[in-house]
Image (cartoon, rainbow over all chains, first blue to last red; front, side, top):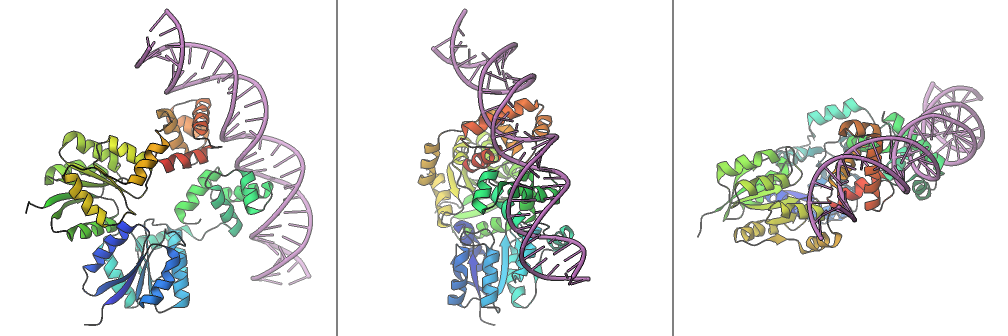
Length: 204
Length: 204
DNA sequence: TTCGCCGTATGACATCTGTCATCCGGCAGT
DNA sequence: ACTGCCGGATGACAGATGTCATACGGCGAA
């Protein structure tokens, strides 16, 4: 038999991370050689442990799993990347694939798919939930411009126009213009709804 | 040695649930006898499998793990209850304890604490993160009245006053009054911020 | 090069939101 | 019986937010 597959696990919640490690540990051909809890520790750990497959959660401190994936893909293109996430947001799938991910799994898929995905990406396959792929194609690309996205993201926590203007070095009127166009593009009626919808679609 | 401890696992994300099962499966004295993915399936499963300890995630479809805990505590007070959650919100801890929980764990605690907690609650101990307990005591009780909470929860998704009034069978003015008092109690400047703060504290 | 889009900005306007004073009925303490 | 709080409501007002027209410079595509 070929040597074991060296896997890195990146996930900020230790209980989940160690549980996933226990799960993968049950597979004879897979070995978890490294665990990190922050996105910005991924690249160094991948280098140090000569990892074959990196399993990356998206929501992490430091940087997101998608950003970490992009870093690894650029520096070490041979390393396979599996992105794992709680939220099946089509926009996440899109950006993950653009960042060079080989697989995209949601955490409410059966656990068996995890080990399967690791083996498949190593064999050169791509693993994507077909439902999610369809959803990603159906909803189209992010209609928001960079600035609209920035302003909307900043507005999502309840900041007022004046605060947004100060934080982003814009005039208050401009802030309102961006939010207004974002609201129209998303076909909603106020910034809170716009933020919610954009978040759900993975557009923030 | 005494017979194995029978554990039920309630968690909606199958990958996490099965991973936690794998983790607990490594402990010789613990056996996961049932797994459910919805809060409203907990009570029946506890009954059917004569469970010793129920491990409950809070965020679940059907009903929350805290509500499930209350049901089990009322119907079968001998069953020990461990509440497990992603979010260390002091308000959650408070309501979980009021619902009869014996332990409260956050998912970013070390995995080893899980099995420990199962054994400890069975021995009659209570297991609570001391940091979180301090935070819960420090922030005091939920200052919002029932109606204020309801209105704020409904407002959190970006609904307009007219929609809230219609949905809750109130006048628009009353909706604004409740939101206004909630905003003042939370010492913030608008409904979006109020919703965010209340959510963070576990008050919604 | 011209067209269109993006980023930025202003001013005017309408509507929504938040605040405040005030009111009523019910209900729990004292 | 009185006081205070909660749920519910109204009206008036100020300020925040959303819309629209319009403008300008830059930059990429046709």
